[in-house]
Every structure is written in structure tokens, then in C-alpha cells.
Length: 230
Image 1 (cartoon, rainbow, N blue to C red):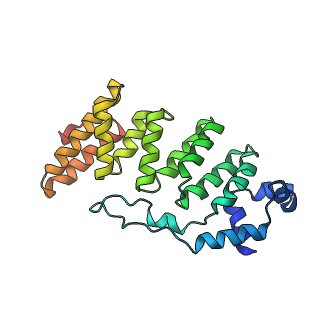
Image 2 (cartoon, one colour):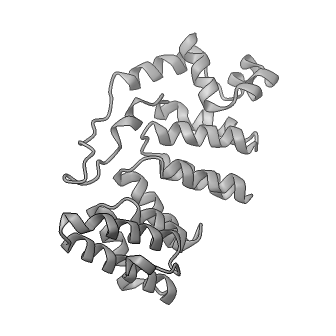
Image 3 (cartoon, one colour):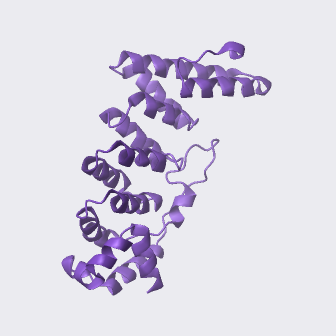
């Protein structure tokens, strides 16, 4: 029962379930609480493996810390998701997205896109970027790249978020943008970032601290006066 209560709280639907009644809610989705717990335990007994998180070995598929998140079985996900999104409450839906994404679920991109399609208030949408960039792995990088292709957020902002990964995989994304973007301004910024990265990698370790500060300034403000960093 404790595990079930924790699940409800993490889903962010505590208020919703309290005001509408547990029995009524689960009758609506034809799901018994005991079944939910049983399926969740089954998922917990089959954890997904993750590769080591190091820049030398590249990004892991899923950051190891995400794998410890509370999970929900795929057989129950759609049922719970329907109820949660039917509340049309941004906080409740974001809590659900947080749970799905933080658990490393393969459904993360789909659920994030559903949230962005449902809510258009900037404050609600911007929470998604904070959530995605909380972890550094291949899945989160792919989600940022897809959002950039779709124009779901400012492409320059997303490009800067990608550059902050500072890995071989993120450099490959920046290179693709520099070579194929139809947006001249975005392509120019990607080329500038790529040039900085290449020069940085060629430097001796003693000069990298200054170069790193320069790169960070460019990411925060492409028009910044480099001054002493020139």
C-alpha cells in the first residue's frame, strides 16, 4: 500500500485522486490498485542496464541515476496517462511526464511531446527543458535534437543546451546543424560553436580553462564581447 501511495504522489495526482476518490478513478480506467502494484513489481525485477556515464566512453543510453526512478508498467501506462491528461492540469501532467522521463522509459519522447501539444503557456512548457537537461544521456540528447528540428522551442536556445553536453555525440549534432540547417543564423552559430570545440580539443591542457570560459560565454550570449578571451 505504501508503494501505491508513493506512486500516486509521484504522479502528481494526489489532489486529483483525493477529490475524485480512488475507487471512482480506478473504476473509470478499469484498473485494480493491486494489479498496478503487481505489474510495477514485475517491472522492478527487470531493470534496464546502462553503460558507464563518462565522456571518454561517450554518453550512456540512459543515465544510471534515471534507472532508479519509480516505474510504471507499459500495460498500465496508457490507462493512467489517460486519466492524468484528462485533468488538463499542467502540474499534474508535468508530474506524470517527470515520472516517465526520470525512470528512463522509452516512452519519454512521446509523453513529452504530448505534454507540449496539450499546454502552450511558456512557464509550463519551459519546465520541460529544465527536466530534459537535468540528465546527460543519449535519450535526452535525441529529444533535444528532435525538438530543435520541429521548432518546438527557440532553436538557438536548444543548440546551446546541446553544446553544453560537451561530448562527441553532441558535437556530431552541432556539426549536422552547421552543415544542413536552412536557417542561416542558426547554421552560423553552429559553425562558430564547432570551431570553438575543434580549437579547444587542439589546445594544451594549460590553455583549456580560458577557452572553456570563452565557449561558455558564447553559449550564453553569441554577441558577447570576448575582451580578455580573444
